[in-house]
Each structure stands twice: as structure tokens, then as C-alpha cells.
Length: 420
Image (cartoon, rainbow, N blue to C red; front, side):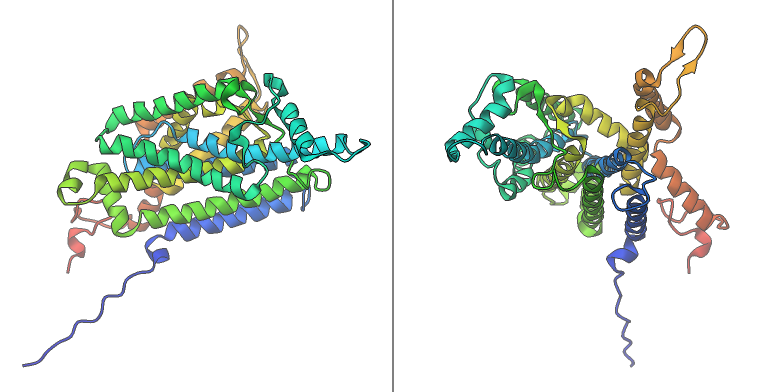
């Protein structure tokens, strides 16, 4: 009697199971180096500083698109409120940027005073400069940590994260799903937007926060051409890490459970999994990712106001992911980048107006119509989005010579003739 021992099963590495991660990171690195070399800050000056900022902001929008794809495309939660977390991240870092910039202005104005200014005088001066536009002079309590970069960076994570945690816990424990959950997230966003529009919110109401493009301590010494490249690097790093984190989350057993919740939540719950816990984790994690993206976006935009948190922005976000192809991380990136760059081209005067004789088509007015039409066309003729077209091209190239019926239900499964 002989005993045979089977060879140990070797598990593939994370990169081997997710080849798109290495491809994406390589393309992102190549893009960042190319933009740096062609930019005005450190390179040849072929690309203007304003366009470098556009590219940096586009990378931030790609990051929030990944968050949206993770919560919607993989977990099946159509959140219409993730741009609220994006805006909160911008407000948190914007408070420090505006406070420190204003502090420098106040100190310069008091430098020639007969006596050195007291901390109270400096604080009163800062309050008058920031809140005089809304008829106030006192610094609200929400600005209590605005003089500390470390604490405000912590607020970028904590404030949106806690809001998502509390909202998600209340919603998921009540078994709210489908369109009702989408309406709740939209209501949360609308409530936050209406609150921020009030002058007594402590965040300057409709005026928002401005002058965010001036980095304290470097505004006079470092030109915008260099600052724009710095933020481009930071945005690219955040996007790369965010993509890597999202790919890790959706891989393995955890990712299978998340996709199972998307496809059949009741069955996953019947199997004994804590569905609410999984959904709460994904919802909170993606809110934090969205907030980090906003914290990098608005210093490049230079201003943030409550209109950025309006519900329509979250609807646009869902459109980007749908156009790119939800359920594919690179599809979300493609969709966000495509829409962002096309929006800049059409609304920034890059696209020439079309004179029809009786009417002149001005793309600044018709861009949203074109975006809506694109969404309808993608839904009808390419429901898997641009990312699905990429999948189709790769699949056709790899299996064009295969024959026979599918052995399994998935499109990439083995064929009958290939079985041992």
C-alpha cells in the first residue's frame, strides 16, 4: 500500500491576482512624470500652470470616483451623498489654509504698531478679516483647531468618517435599502448644504472659504507653478494608494462577501454574515477616501462654497462612474478623468462654437446636455461603460481562437473542450 502526498497549493500573490493594479500604478507614474517634465514648475513649460492644476484636480476626482465605485459598483449602495464628504474634507483643510493666510496678513499689518500685538489682538484681527463679510468678528467654535495643521488634517478624516459612521449605522440597522437609501443619502447632503449656506454656520455661509491656493509659509517664496506640481504629486500619490487599498478590499473573501451583498443581500445574510457590518465598513471607508480627495482638490481650486456640496454634485459623480463602468476600479477612473477633462475643454473655451445660421451652439451652455446624452447612450449601448469596452477588447484578443460552449456561467470560464 503506497501513500501519495499531494503537492501544496501555492496561492497567487495579490499582484498576480490583480494585474490591473500594477498596470494602473505604472501608467499613473508615467503620467505624473510626463506632466512634471512638461509643466512650468520644474520642466519645459509646455503645459501651463492652470492646466497642471486641472490635471491635479482630475486625479482627485478619480479618487472619489473609486470611492463611489467601491460603495456602489461593488457593494450595491447607490449613495447620492458622497460629494458631501468630499466637500467636508475641503472645508476642514480650507479652515487651516484660510486661518494661517489671514494670520500672516494681520501680523504684517500690525508689524509697525508702537507696541507688539497681543494674542487677543491678533485673534480679533483674524476674526474681523475672515467673518467681516458675514457681519461678524468672533471666531466660531468650529474653528477651534484651525491654527493647527495636524489637528485639521485629523479632522479631514474624523468629521466625514464620524458622519458616515453615524448615518450608516442608523440607516443599515433599520434595513433601509435600494432607492430609499439613495433618497436618504441625498437628503443628508441637502441638509448639510442648506446648513452651510447659513451665515451663522461658522463657515462664512454662501461666501465659503477662499484664497486656498496660497500655501501658508510658501506663498511669497514658492510660485504657483511649483505649488501646482507639488499638489499634482500629492494627488497622484493619494490616487495610487487609494486604488491599491480599494483593490485589496475587493479581493479575497472579503471582496466576495461584498459583491454577494450587492447581488443577493438576503442570501448573504442567511449564510450568517454580518451584512450591516460589511456595509457600514464600506460606507465609512469610502467617505474617508472621498474626504481625502476633497482635501487635496480644493487647495488646487482655490475656493469652496456650499454649492460644491449640493446634491447635484453627487448625482454627477454617479454618472461619471456609470460612464466609466461600475464594478471596475479602472472604469471609475476612466469615467471621472474623461468627464473632467471634457468638461474643462467644453466649458473653458477649448471647443469652438457651432454657428447654425439661426442659432449658435455655445458649449458652455450645452455641455450638461451633452453629458446627459452621453449617459443615456452608454446606458443603452454600453451598459458596462468604457471599462467594459476595454474588457471586451482584452478578452477578444486573448480568447479569439477558442471554441465550444462555456463550461461555467462566467464569461471568462473554461470551455467544454478545455476540460481534462
